[in-house]
Structures are given as structure tokens and as C-alpha cells.
Length: 251
Image 1: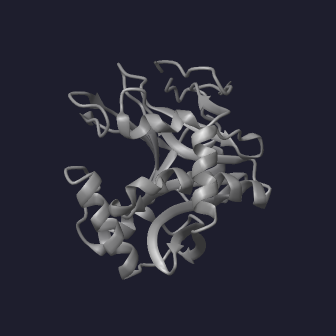
Image 2 (image 1 turned 135 degrees about the vertical axis):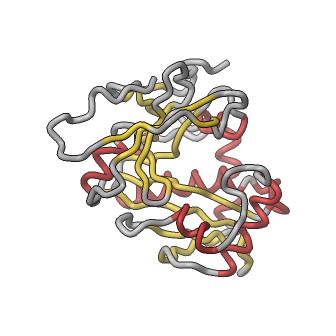
Image 3 (image 1 turned 120 degrees about the vertical axis):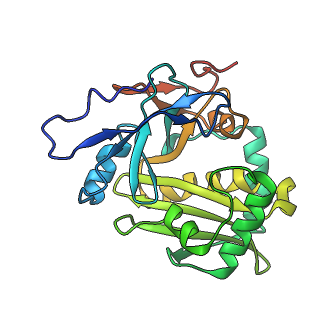
């Protein structure tokens, strides 16, 4: 579904394509990445324009897959005001909404956040590219100078359970990364964090939540298709998928 030919050619911003590299999501697969010129001056309007063309942010880089032989990565967005939770999501919301407080924090380094991030990475992604290293790399991955970023804390009786790193855009919220206490896995904190972001976007009057890429063949990414309705970027436009309509490639 990836196609960048529709990008506004009148724009003064340059786009570059990387050399092939190992895919972060699918084993034994090579990938390429299209990214905005790192020297470009990015503001909220440009960020919104690019995320509405399937781009994502990692640190200060705006990028999307540009793989020659693979179209597995599909950028999604969720219409916050139309969201229809399923039975499991409703249970999760009722259970956690009464017990967990959500506190917005600025995009600043906090040792408590970093400790939680390291514990999460050690449990869930110990061999991944985002494995815990040092505070500077951690902040470089999650933040940048031009994004309006919040670190939303999820606390129960004062205890930090999760952090949802979220960018505020003119027309929505972009879910950058969520990490949580591995010992609280049964609480469904990852699910609750995205449910809360959808609810918060609706409260703010913002129409969209951007949860990132969905990949049918990746167990770590496939859960995103359970939030309905949703829209998937085809490379030219957003295609709507209703409550029971399977995504392309979904079983």
C-alpha cells in the first residue's frame, strides 16, 4: 500500500530513500525507508500534512516505508468521535478508568519514566533496536525540537504503571510509543492507553488518533486492527474499514 508519488511535488521539501536494511518487524525481510530531509524546518502544519500521507515520526525523523517488494506496513488512523469499542475493550475501559489516573507531563527526561521504559524493553523487546541503552538515546527516540509532545502518565494509587508518549497535532493525536510495567500485563495497559488517547482526542475535539503502522504478519502490530472503525492509507487516499470488515491481508 505504500506509494509516495502523490506527495505534493510543488513542496520545497526534499525526500530521500534509504539503502536496504533489515526489516524491524518481519524476519528475513529487507526494507527501505522514505524520509523527509532532516534539515527541513518542520512545523505543526507540515507535520499534519505528512502524517495524513502515512508518515510517522521517530525522534526528529519523519518517515514511511518505501519497500520495493513489500507493502505489509499500513499506516492507520482512528476516527475518535466514531469509535465503537468491542466487548473486551469496554471491559478494559470500565475496569481501568475507575482505578487509574492519567497525568500529562512535558516531554522532559524523568528517571522514573526511564526506569519503567528499561524494564518494559527488557521484558518485551530485549533484542530489538529500541532496547534500553542510555537516557540520551531514549529521549532522542521519543522526542524532538519541533513536535508538541506529552508524556501521559498512568498511575494507580500513585504508582507509575505506564507512559504513553503522544504528539498533539492540529487534527489529532499521534501515538508515538507506549511502555508499561511488565508485571501489570493482565491489566491490559497497552489497550487502555490507546482507548484513553481515543477518548482524549474526542474530548479535545480532534477527529483523529494515529496509532502507527499495522502489519498483518507481525504479532506485535496486528492488535491495532481491533480498533474500529479505522482508516488505512493506500498510498493515495484513506480507505475506511467498518466494524467487521477485515483489513487487506488480515485473516
